[in-house]
Structure formats: structure tokens, C-alpha cells
Image (tube, rainbow, N blue to C red):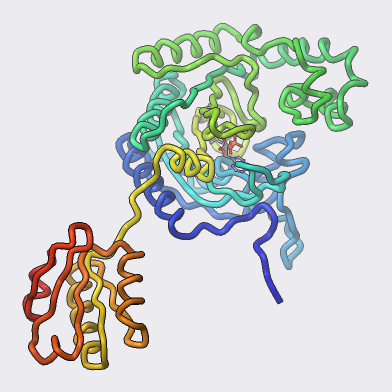
Length: 414
Ligand code: HAM
């Protein structure tokens, strides 16, 4: 029987894993500079957590969730994103009682039953960050500058920061009315889902992926023309902070995010090298969600980065060093095997990555392995070396070589 990973789900293994680890390390470092602390929320939640937050009429909830009944008949969903679980955790654990702002980051797998294609998977990883308790647009700018610094530290260029404001509960009704009026004579051109959305949540028509809906919505009213004065002020202040912090951006009034919880600021970071699925990170404000989940009114903002997409950009931009052993000990014969084992053990306990050859393998194949691993130094031990208590060392990069006694090995390699 031959087993394959499920469609749209991938293994991540060396050498790619080093790029992932590098991203995680740089992200943790950068997030710490901004005071974000790690949070680990569960991978499964009650289905309601996602319906309530992402929205009943979104593509994610309507079509993409991995939902099942557990043995007690509870509706459970594999998280399609990380914001709702973090908000659930924040409210359930009364983290709002701690001094504001509370700032968290997370990473891990998310699950969406989407049609797999390049850059779009059914299991994908996100690194995300969420900040609770600040309504001021200053924190919107800080979040964007954190993303900018992260991408800079990863050596990525040609990224586009797209910014929008989608208003609040004050301005939304006016915009909704304008959308309903715009689509009222175009309903036949909309897909069956959008016919329903027209009644329930017309904003979602702007996010539909069906081609005919994309055509029909051309020329639809733009949310930025309907912002109330508070939202307009917030947006203007954000734009001035972005100028102050030197964060190049474009305003994209057509960008509506595919999740219902957003208010005011929304953004996406895109890169044309990614092809059709060009958003490497996305996020925005969700000032009402904590309250929806039963907490006190708490403004919040966050983002998530798509790891696969980010890792693929790193590949394009030159990649990442692959770690290599400091020492490889090739051994010929049983006594050499024992001596080698004791030496690698000592080196490892000193914090040096050391590898040993296995006596069943010829010297040639052991050397090939040392080469493939890009070991810095190779030691060769055979019967002669055992007899003399000394062995040869060779530095593979420049072919320099010398000789040392076994007792010197631990101090020779620092
Ligand atoms: P999202 O736009 O659904 O937002 O996803 C964020 C990022 O995750 C995308 O820009 C993309 O890079 C990656 N992504 C999404 N779906 C897939 C997929 N099927 N395959 C590969 N990568 C994917 C959210 O998830 C929000 N929770 C972001 C947020 C945090 N907003 C506020 N806080």
C-alpha cells in the first residue's frame, strides 16, 4: 500500500525547513522589538467561534471549513485562521483585565478547503500578530512598520503595502445601501451565492471569486467614499504616520477583505512574483470582535503572513544558509569506530555539531557524506591512527590539513 499526503497538503523537510526556521527566528526577534509575546491557541475550536467572527456569508465559512462532529456530537472546526481563536482566548481568560495594550503573536497550521493551486493550499501555515486595546491609528502604523522591518530583515524587496479603510458600523449602513442600489438591476448576473449575499451581506459580493461576479461588480461604489468623519480622521492620521515612518504604500479602495470582522484599517502586502495568489500578508482592525465574543469593548488590530508564500519569496531572493557539521569523523575498523564515537560525543557535549561515519561504509562513501553535509573539518581514523593515538584533520573548504592527538581534539575545535 502506498500512501500520499492529502491533496493541497504538503510535507516540509530539509533543506526547505531551514528557510522556515530562519523566518520564524527573524519574526520572533522583530515581534519582540515591538513587545509582542507568543500565544499558542488550539488548532480546533467550536465551529461557532469561526462562524461568529469570520461571518456566515463569507467564502471561508460557507465553503472552506473543515468541520466535523466529535464523538459527543459537538461541531468542531480545524481553524481556518488564527484571529478568532486568539480573541476567544483573550476573552475566555479575561486578558482584557491586564494593562493595555496586550500584544500577541502566533504561528501554526491553518486549514481551508480551497481549490489547491500555486500558493494556495488546504493546510498552510501562518505567522500572525494581534494587538488589543488601542484605538489610535498610531498602532496601525506600528503594525505596518513591524511588517516592513520583518521583510527588510529577511532581505525581501518589491513588496507592495496596500492600505484601505472599510469604515465602521456608523458608515457601513450608508455604504450597504449604495451597494444594494448598485446591484439591484444586476442580480441576474450574480452567482447563486451572491444572490443570497445581496440580501444578507452585499459587501461580500465584492470579494466573490466567481468570474461573472467580478465583471458585474465593476464600477461598484467604493467604501472610502462613504467613511464617517471619525473613520476618515483615523485613516488620514494613519496615512500621515505612514509618511512619518517612511512606509511606502498605495491606497487601494477596492480591497475588501474576505472576513467580516474588519472595521476601519485593512491592508495587504503583495508581491508580483507570487503570481495569482499574490498576498504574502494581510490584516486589519477588528474593533468589535472582542465585544462580539462577550468581552468589554476593545479595539484590536492584527495580521497574518502566509508562510509558504513568504518562504517561496525567500527562495527567489537568494535563500538561506543551510547548517553544516563542524566536524565529520570517518572511521575504518571497529576500534576506530569506538574512538570516533567517544570523540563525537565529547564534541557534541561542547556544543559542536559532530557526525561520525559508520564502519559498514567505505572511506569513499563516508567522505561523500561529509562532503554532502558540507562538514567544515574531517578527521580520518583507521588502525594506524589507533596505534599512534593521533589522526589527520582536513578542512574541506581550503584543503588545509594537519595532525592532532585524540586528546587534543576537544580543544582544537571550538
Ligand atoms: P487572510 O487574508 O485570510 O487573513 O490570510 C492571511 C494570509 O494567509 C494571506 O495573505 C496568505 O498569505 C495566507 N493564506 C491564506 N489562505 C491561504 C491558503 N489557502 N494557502 C496558502 N496561504 C494562504 C487572515 O487569516 C486573518 N486572520 C489575518 C488577520 C489577523 N487579520 C487580523 N489579524
